[in-house]
Image (cartoon, rainbow, N blue to C red):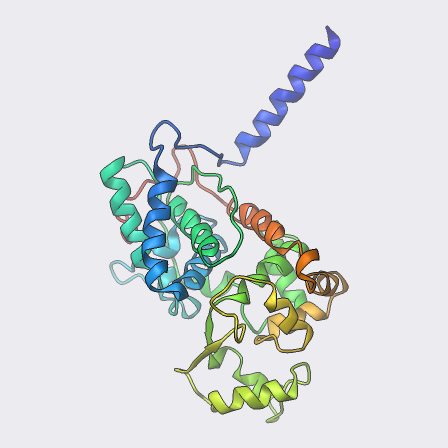
Length: 321
């Protein structure tokens, strides 16, 4: 009898812990059972026509979660003169809002006022990655949408391409993401493009003396200089040359060759734990990256979620109700 009581207590505690996380698998099973199919169909429609949208959708979810938690605040437009997260410099290059809006429109017809924009974003990011040969993962749902979106918070809280390891570790750590999550989620740079100004200081003025970053391969610097001139704010280049449309482990190969585009990429070689992880992903058959990425995305997707009666379920993702 004592053992039975103990087991019952343990099961209850595990249940309470799961509920405290705020989101759960199958959340819409009764209220909107087709939610994942609808989001995937919508995402597939857009990615089939523009595969390069996968990277911005993944980045959008990342940027959403790092500011006020995963509450869809990155989707809100500015109102009444107040600038939103979307207007911050790191977010001005985000694309793919039409994917979220289209999925929301379809879901409002299927089950009005039920599915949050933040949940749609989490699902679309997962589907976008899987559609370009990347991993898939089970997305816990039940987030509600935030009502606040402030430009200055995005500028302050988002990691930057200029960050060193210490800064990155601190930024991720504040959100209960550990060093492994840091190096794994950095692997998202295997897809997408970047503006020259995000790394041009490494090419032309690394320490303010007109020098180059010694941590970047000289031949790679020479290649980048042919595309990016000083003070160039319009040109974009591939973050993972030759493989930027496909989600794979090539990013880690580039990092080991000192060809990571950003200072934050190079920073992964300055810490023993992250360096070991980078090196461990070089053999395709020994790589754990896909599995690890899914796990870290699920963990990231639980940051600061709004549940219960907090926040709202927006009717339109760009506007508060």
